Structure formats: C-alpha cells, structure tokens
Length: 272
Image (cartoon, rainbow, N blue to C red; front, side, top):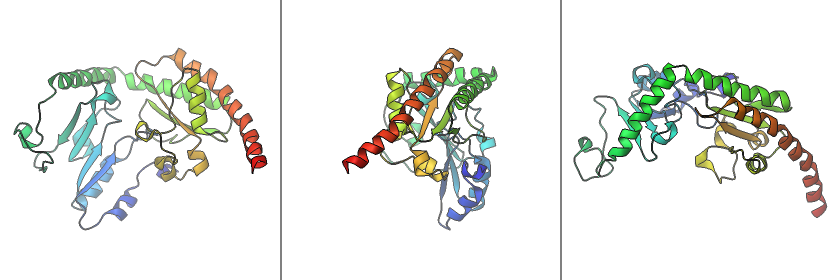
C-alpha cells in the first residue's frame, strides 16, 4: 500500500535511460504532504551517472533540511512557502556541479543570473529561515502534527465514507488531503468557502483545472475519488479552536451535498 504513496526506486530505475543527465523528485508532495525517499532515489540516480535535484519547496520550514543526508546535487526552496517575502528563493548547488546560464548580463552571482539582487527579500528569507529553525528546534513540527491529526481524526469520526490520501506514510505536518465519497470536491470547496473556510480541491498551481489531480490518479485512486478529494493546509498560526470549528462545520456540508447529489442525477435524467 505504501508504494502507492511514494515514488518507487524500481520505477525510477525503469525510467532511467543511458542519456539521462538529471533526476528531479519532490522532497514533500504539495497535495498529500507525503515525504518521498529522496536519499534512496538519489543513490539510484547517481549509480546511473545522473545528477539529482530535489524540489524542497513544500518541506522548507517544516522539516530540517540537510543536503548531505538528502544526497542531492541541487536543492531548491521558495520563500513564500515558509513565511518569507514572495519572489524569493534559494538554489543549493553542490561544489563541482556546473550550470549553464539561461540569461546573460551582469557577472555577479558567478555569472549564473543577471539582474539587481532583491536585498530586502534576501534578508527576509534569511530571517524566515532563522525563525523556522528555532520553531523546529522547539518541537513546533510535532505540535503542528498533533493539530493535523486532531483535524483528521475529528473529521473521520464524524463523516463516513471518508479517508486520508497518503495516510500512514510519513508526511509534513501542515498538509492533509481527505476524500469524501459521493461528494464533488469543487462543490465542497464552495460550500466551505461560504462558511469562511478556505480549502482546495488540489494544488494552488492547479486551480482552475478541470481534470482530476494527476498526483491522486498516480496513487491509483479512481477518478471519482480523486474528484472527491480536498486539501486542508494548516500553519504555525492555526489554533485548536480553529481545527474544532472545521470539525464542527464540515459534516453538515458533506451531508447536504450528498443529499443533493441524487436529486441532481434525477434532474439530469429527466432532462435527457
């Protein structure tokens, strides 16, 4: 079962070709929060002569990041996912890894990128990283995990035909992806929005898409279940009272949509 939530090393090896130069895998998935076995995948990539990059955007500020432990050649993070100013980010490049510039101009940043540096943004990102490091050292991630578990357990106790996508696998503390059978995620998102709760039917970068999540379908969820899945995101500012408010309002919204579903089907059949 766990293989359905993770990138399998055997699948990576099957995808490698003699001319594969770079392998890139998320450290933590942005829809389910599942933490991928990047060290094992990096070792397989290196054995095939390829470099390994990990997208750590969803992990930064939520997990300790150690490039030696990850075994990566390149690692990228984005500031706005860890409370830093938007438009800032970091690319770690291991020594002796040479990059070819895509843009040309000034010779600062060792010729990798031209343009005036955003000093204020860089300082803000550095401060955000400092705060995140302190938060992690003070067991902030464990406290946030407890809140996420409280949310999931409360919802599953109150709503039948529901479950956690990626449940049982290691996940970052802030992300929860749940399915509610016989409910359209889009309708549930709207219903909860009217109650003041912001959730998502997928990743932020897929908003407006009409197809079910490629992440969930790759995990072998049926199309119906993928379309019935909603992502909840917590933050360092989330409180127990807010979690309990969600647990209180969600069951009625799900029940109402399930009640309406047969009526919509009957209306469609009559209209046809």
